[in-house]
Length: 326
Ligand SMILES: NC(=O)c1ccc[n+]([C@@H]2O[C@H](COP(=O)([O-])OP(=O)(O)OC[C@H]3O[C@@H](n4cnc5c(N)ncnc54)[C@H](O)[C@@H]3O)[C@@H](O)[C@H]2O)c1
Image: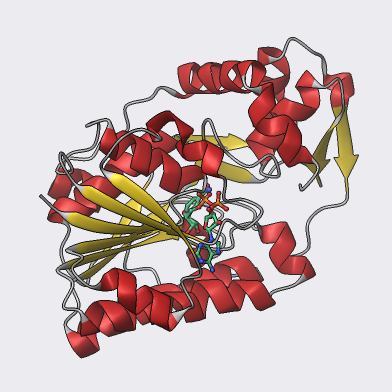
């Protein structure tokens, strides 16, 4: 039996991880006892955990990862931490970076320090490929220095460096994961896929930034969670693992596929001014996690996207109240 503290477990990816772990779908986590620590910000949602509400293997503690006393209380007796909690939306970080630094940098440092104090065996810090900056050709491997461009990615890069420093300085068994863009059910409808799908389902236009030629690698959230579980079980302390292997698409091409999936035409595209500092292309080389830990994405993009669109179509009651906050 393993006790695991999962931060941000009521958000999009964290809740997918919790649901999958409790359903026995993740390697190495059968029988785990899970404590979710989540502040339930605008993007955290109890409803994301409703499918496992009656499972006895977890509890939700509503609180802030930057609250040192609370974190210390919860950290006692934990074997592992999987750290998803963050402020995550680039556009919000452009309008105000304060919460991003407080949660992503300071909050991560509070968790790391407490994990050292309580001699936690494993700590997985969940990060993003956005810390590398933008790349026109080729792919980044994990030796690439960080060069973030948005306040969001800069705060994530800061937290990655702290995590690695706590390994080198204190011997904490931290691994860092850097994943490409996720899509799937339960994603807050401010991010591109759920925003566009819910707009289309409501008969509205979709706002496409700039020329729409920005390239992203899209990975189903369940593949990301499997990658994180593999790193938790077998990743090397002090190592960074890129998680990718989805499908590289321009935003324009993704938009076309979403329009098709929703049965509407290109007249629904509304071209809007580009996001300041918008990264042109992300692309990770995920050889390390494939060769060391046997990771492979399992969800084909077109099937995953079709299932995701269907999910939003049949879960209006989940997303309609959230659009007010978006
Ligand atoms: N979404 C992606 O495509 C993607 C890709 C790569 C990496 N990531 C990383 O994965 C992690 C999860 O992302 P997501 O898309 O699920 O985000 P999300 O915004 O859906 O969820 C974030 C969760 O963190 C919680 N939270 C925020 N501040 C907190 C605080 N101070 N204390 C406790 N809880 C707090 C929120 O309530 C929410 O439940 C993040 O660290 C993000 O950087 C996301």
